[in-house]
Structures are given as C-alpha cells and as structure tokens.
Image: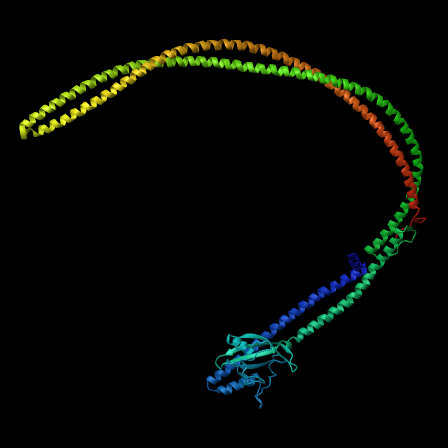
Length: 597
C-alpha cells in the first residue's frame, strides 16, 4: 500500500514545464475536437436532409410525368402500354434484348442510385436488372421484408424505407434508403433508392480535413508551448537553485540576472532583495548575540543582590502577619458571640411581635364576637315578636275553625231536611200518577243533591276537625318554643356581658405586649449596631492580615522571580552563544549587493 501511494505521488510530481505543456495541449485538443465533432454532425445532418429531399423530389417529379402520360392515355393520344413504356424509358432507358435497362445518367440519384417500379403484389414493373420478377418475399440478411415495407410506405401517401443491402461485387452491405409513392391509376409504386455511401463522401472529406487541421494545430501548438514553457521554467529553475544555496547557508553568491520583465523577473528581484536582507539580519544577529552575552553577566550579579534583600523583607513581614492573624482571631470570636446574642434578642423581638399580633387578633375576635352577640340579641328579639304574632294567629285560626265547624253542622241539618222534603215530594208525585211524573224526577234530583251535600259536609267536618287538631298542636308547640326562646334570650344577654369583659381584658394585654415588643426591637437594633461594628473591625483585621499575607507572598514571589530571572539570564547567555554559533554558519558577503531591476 505504501509503495502504491509513493508511486502515485512520484507519478504526478511534475515540473511546471510538463504541467504547462499538458494543460496547453488539452486546451488545443478539447476545443478542436468539439469543433470537429460539431462540424461532422452538422454535415451529416445536412447530408441526410439532402438525401431525403433529393429522393422525395425525384419521385414526385416522376409522379407528375406519370400523371401527364395518364392524361394522354385518357385522351386517346397513346395506349396504356405505350405510355407505360415511355415512362420506363424516361426513368431508366430503353429495354435491352436481355430484358435489362440502363440507368439514366441524366438523373442524379447518387453513384449507385436508380428508379424502379413495383406493383402492389411485389412484381417489378421497371428495374435495371430484375424487371418482371416478384420480390414480395424478398428479405435482407437480417430478415427484413423490405419490398413489403416499400409498398406499404407508397400506399400510405409516400414514405422512406431503410435497410442494409449489398454494394459492389464483394458482398459488402451498406445502408440504403428508398422513397416510394403509389399511383393507383396504374397500380404502380414509383420508387427511388440510393446508398448513403454515395452521399457521405463529402462528410468523410470534411472529417479528414478537420482531423488534419487538428493534428497540425496540436503539433504547432506543442512546439510553441515548449518554447514558452522553457521561457517560464528556465528562470524559475535559476531561482530554485539559488534558494537551495541560501538554505545551505551560502549568502555570498552573485545576484540573479534574469531579463524577464514579468512576474518571474519581479520574483528574481524580490529574491535578491530577500537574500540581501537575510545577510544584513545575520550580521545584526551576530553583533546582538555578543551584546546579550556580555550583558547577561552583569544581570546575574544584580539579581543575586536583589534576591538577598527580598529574603530579609520576607522574614520581617512574616512576624507582622503572625500578630495580625492573632488579632483577627480574637475579633472574630467576639463577633461570633455578639452575633449569637443579637440572634437571641432578635428572636425575643420576633416572639414579642408575634404575641402582639396574636393578642391583636384575639382582641379583634372578641370585639367581633361581642358585635355578633348584640346582633343575635336583636334578631332573637325580632324572632320573639314573630313567635308572639304566630301564637295570636294560631288562636284566631282555632276560633275560625270552630265557626267553620258550626257552619258545617248547619249544612248537614239542611241537607237532612232537604232529603226528607224530597222523599215527601216523591210520595206525592207517585200519588198524582202520570201528572206528577215530572215533579217526581225533580224530587229525585233534589234528593241526590241533598245526599251529595250531606256527604260533602261530613268530609268538610272531618277536615275541619283535623285542622283544629293540628292548630291545637301547633299552638302548644309555639307556646313551648316561646318559653324556651325567652330563656335563650336571657342566656345570650349573659354571654354578651362576658364578651364585653373579655374585650376590655384583651385591650389591656395588647397594650402591655406592644410596649414589650417595642423594648425588644430597641434592644435588637442596638445589638445589631454593636455586631456591625465588630464585623467592620473583623473585616479590617482580615484585610490587614490578607494584605500582610499578600506582602509576604509577593516577597516570596519576587524571590522566586529573581531566581527564575537568574536562571533565564543564564539560559539567555547560553542561547546567545548558540545563536552566535548558528549565525556564523552563514557565509555573509562583506558588502551588500542589490538585485536585478
């Protein structure tokens, strides 16, 4: 796999000259090939159209001749046989003794093209060599019945038939095209046929001419490209060779002398300028490395003295940090104690506030209960008056029910008397005989009404008795409820007095709790002020400790930095020596030179 990849890279690692040569040749070949292909295709298309038009026009012209001779036959100027023979002579020529006919050289249907006539049954009516034969079952080498297709195209109004047919005596087949039109008056299918080969010679000449031009263009273009690529690649090779010298450390060679006035000439000038700048840079590096090497010795001495002084400052700062840390710890403990006391006082204040809020709620609840008691007393008084009114109404209803009972008794007596009178009337009507029959009917109806009235009176009496019993029971319940209501009124009034005393006591408790809550809040505020002062003191002490620690840390960092600087100075001295050695590997000219302009 590695060998394959390496071979692939080597295969395509071309020079600029080869790449330009390949690119320019492709630019010549591809457009020229496209032009040649389009030219050949257009020529072939035009040739195909020319063949089709030539054959079609030739057949149509011959059809007009046949029509003209047919008119002469119909006019009696010629017989049918004479007219048909004359048309055959015009198409091909006079018939020879062996039955063949020559091809008319005055009619251009291609080198191997000619007319022939075939009937609807496949008989050759006119043909250069096969006149009189039947070709209905004749087919090509691939099995195509071409005569049947020719007849079908002719009978459909005119059409083309394409098939392969031998050309010449060697048996070689070529594509043939025919056009046929049917003349029903004579049962003729007039056909003109030719080979594509006869018309393609112009196409072939165009193709060969185009290919020859293409090859000449490629040869001339290749020569020009080679000359041009040498003009480009030569200076580039010189620049590459000079660059390899610079890469090897040789800066003493002469500047490049290239006559090109294009980008390559500018590249050479820029390369000369770059080489001159590198030479100048190398000389400056050598001089600077000497200066750095000498300065690094003095820097190391100063760093050693500064490091010693920093260690003394660090020792002094450490003692200060220890004292400040002790003070910060004491302040922190006092702050925590004051914080706990402040929290306790705050809890007392919160509890007092909660007790005050609870007592206020109790007072409000007692006052609300007192108001509800008074409202209940008022409503109970109204209810008592309503009960008294109901008792009076019950007494009136009881009296009215007794009066209704008396009326019902009277109605019962009247109904009884009416029934008796109707009985007497019935007896008198029976005595009167036929004259009293109508009166008897009236007496019977009166008796029925009396019985119904008696029955209704009994029902009303029963209902009145029930109502009287209900009224008596309701009246007794009302009296009992009235007595209990009055007793409840007395108890509610006593409850109202108790609520009044509760409200007064609650108001006194609220005032005392409010005073205690205010005192607790004042204590909490004072404690918070003390706690805030201690916190500020603790913060200042902490900042002092942090500052001292930062001073100590900075001093230690400074010591570490000095040691690091000392090491860097030593490394700088070593690097300056190495840089000087590296710069001396370049061969530098004694004076600067300018490039080619």
